[in-house]
Length: 188
Image 1 (cartoon, rainbow, N blue to C red):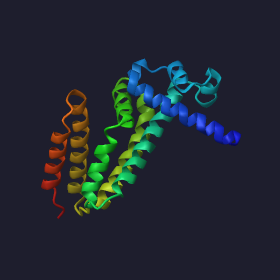
Image 2: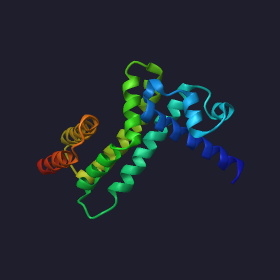
Image 3: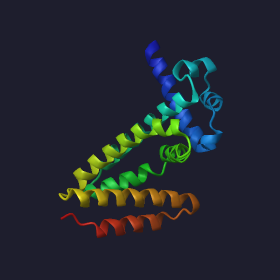
Image 4: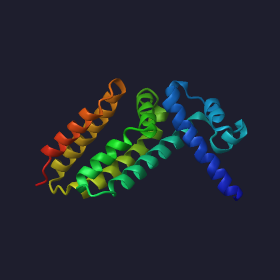
């Protein structure tokens, strides 16, 4: 492995470590020391890649968004499901793992942390744009207002299901809610 590949591997491990620390300890409990210990690197190695906690989280935000986009695209393009159903199920699956839990921690913390919010917005916009492109392709809605409302209702439903799952795990109910939403959706 080349030196450049080793540096990139260390950087990816640090970003994954930051994400897992967000899931395990929350935003307030995630420190650069905790991330460095989780990954098993020296302080110098961490500082070589990220000069501050803000830099680490800014990079983690983009890393998490990239992971979610890749997961959704890969999952939505598999199977024999109708395109919209496959996309909704792919987004639902992407909202049930560590990347989404870490994103929720960052969203919540960004409410009162302007620096984090500034780092979070570009990545979330990029994620939203990618999701919207996939949705437009799958849904085929000609009316822009209807397409936007349908897209936003889908995101609200899926985010709400995941937030509800934190307090009560009821996957059969979530599946019924998704089926009901898909049943009411009919492109014109």
